[in-house]
Amino acid sequence: MIDLVYRHCNANGLVFARPLGTQVFQDSEIAVPKTSALALLRSIALFSDLSEGEREQLSAGAVEKKIAAGEELLAKGSVSGRILLIGEGVVLLRDQGEIVARLAPGDMLGARGVLAGQPESHQALTLTPATLYEIEKATFDNLVTGRAGLVEDLARRVEHHGSQNVSGSPLPIKSDGTRADLVHAIRTMLGGN
Image (cartoon, rainbow, N blue to C red; front, top):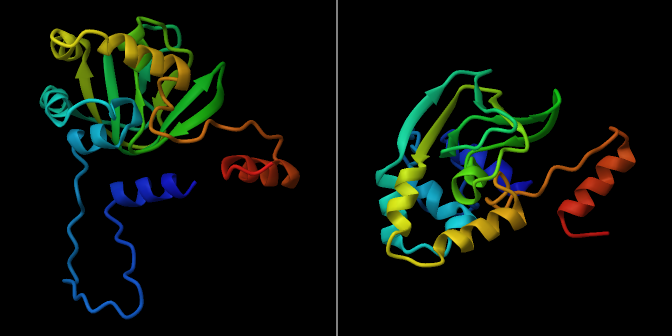
């Protein structure tokens, strides 16, 4: 949960307060940092074994897209030919009209199709206006040409963690909305029983 709050704050330019006694002075005007495709690739666990040069190659092929709220990004059952990195905004995953998960800056979509050739298990659509970085399958194909086993390793990771959960975010927990369910969900997320 802390990671999710941090990623939303960071993506929206919110700066955390300095500890008491810190002697650092700042301008009152704080520029909103822009999350780049390279910064997102560095933060997504799926790409942790790539070299910095390989991440730079992927980010060079990324195209920034501004998407309005309510737009469908991926249809359930479709095989994606692109990976979408979420730079700003919130994306919903739905299954038969029910919200399964909310994705935030630092999460991604489409890896299941690009890396494993498998269809999407949920519909993905924007809840808020969003900034996404789109990386086409051809960019991945160019990357793996000289590196045997990379695609298979990435596909195994996607299978193990799920394509939209490779950022390290906890899987969504279904709840009936009772207080006991909330307490159980928090304990589960924090590693308790």
